[in-house]
Length: 396
Image 1 (cartoon, rainbow, N blue to C red):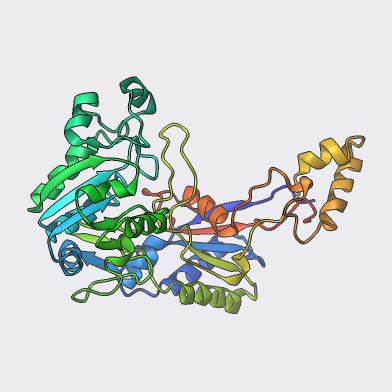
Image 2: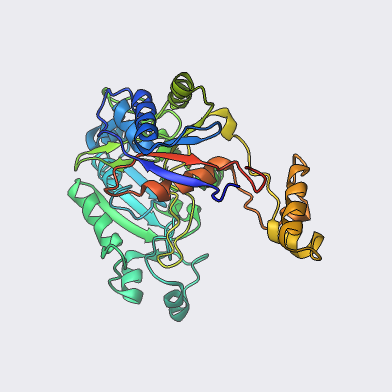
């Protein structure tokens, strides 16, 4: 009898450079790990590769000047309302430098008490004590300082209001900072808005246009095509970018479907096994202490093979044990549950026996597992090899 279920392994790979054949490197790395660790590749294994190395291989980079050029073209009058950016030195700060370099004035509107992914400017208790309603009240920078003073992020030690102001001014633009949560509040300051929220961007754009904004673009519209030979992403623009150097960003990878299909094909040629493959970025989970929701990328997975489409279709074992088979125990209980699994409906949506299982897409679940496995530091495992994910209690 098998005694293990899902196993997630980080796979080491060479340092990826621009122009490398990323699909070949991923396949060869997994095959080498299989040989060295004496682990057989199985049907329906999942092989995942982080978006960072895919983008590196593609050479999908751009400079601060490339961003500035696109901003100048889209906002010719020079004033840009930058709406709801996340608070991040790695993710947004360098983008802000490029945006400010392409503008004369930046009206920066931050959401509060936290940004979209949970980085806090202030805690809710402090808002309550000050009598502030974050749904209605618009705070100037001066008013925020009067009420709360200097507030530094507990993990990074950064005062993001001052940090973002300094980046704007160092780039040569005038800075005005306000805090509000209704996107339409920015229209009292400028009618030309750059929408920077990630997962709510479509709503923000819709509300701004309906309220009379003159110019509305999103980060997905900036570098959605090459500028002066730069990298680009036609679907996501600057969303999903990371700082590469002090003057360059690495964009989210593009055209990833051929990459995952090639990896799948190379593994099939070498082993005869049919594996599933995906590119993954940030996982979709929340830290209970820091309150940060990890997903700063526009999606968890920009590309995956067709076998990863859909959601899990699982029964809740403890529900069956406590309800349908409450009178059984030991081997009799196990065999009864295995029998129910073998005969379960192809679609368990709405069925009580699936209550409490995770109603999320496979790619979001597996991508989160991959992100936790590979980490974001010095593990050196940009490839994750998962076995047994699609197994259940009946698998021998």
